[in-house]
Length: 143
Image 1 (spheres, rainbow, N blue to C red):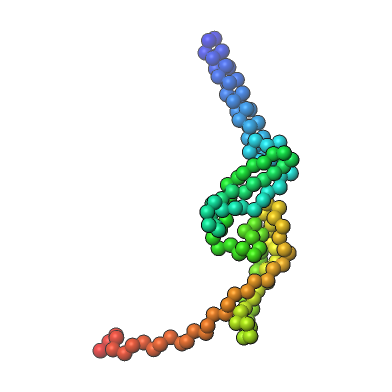
Image 2 (image 1 turned 90 degrees about the vertical axis):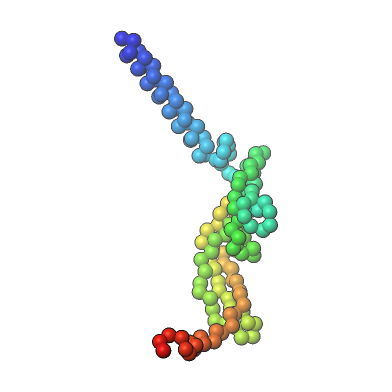
């Protein structure tokens, strides 16, 4: 009889703990860590040092402000920001007058409500033409 009472008490305690943990997880998922707000406005990711790497992003919702960790890739294009993701065409032919080649990108995804241009155009210098590889040196190989 005592074993049955102890088992029932342990079962009720386990049930209460799992319910409390499930409610806590639901609260965290709604609007960020410990938040009741649903309409967060996030700023750009600002690296802690230099112009890329780990940093922080600030968000505001009403009177609440939060800082979350973020990371700026070191190969990002500063003109259009790290939060704007584009799908790019292939590089065009080299323009002999400017020595540059260009391509166009169409907006694929804007993260954290970033203000992104729908299409962008980027350029880079043309690479010089590579000469044919030098012939293999004589004397190496079979004699």
